[in-house]
Image 1 (tube, rainbow, N blue to C red):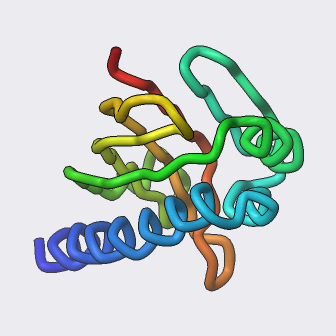
Image 2 (cartoon, rainbow, N blue to C red):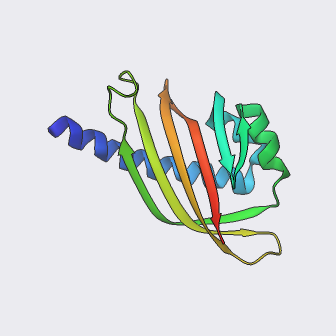
Length: 131
């Protein structure tokens, strides 16, 4: 039971650190986005599917400049038997995003991230504007 609590605490701390890095990168340093994804990472952005970290970076660079504000954040460890013991977390974030001259909109984003050495990499990313 104590080990489970420690893993949940780690998931929460990781989610805070990871999402801070993610949203700073997408808002200010999009040319570095590929570093956040596995080589085989998946992105679903408002129903548009993109595969591969380099292709994801190209897709994100084409989006209008953005400013994200996270309002809610949740994280859960994924059971070891589901991911063969690989340290993996599910992160859910929501908040407000403003693109260039457009009005601010609510968004919802879900990440599956996995440990790769001392770095976290996105396995799967699903972003939705709430219109």
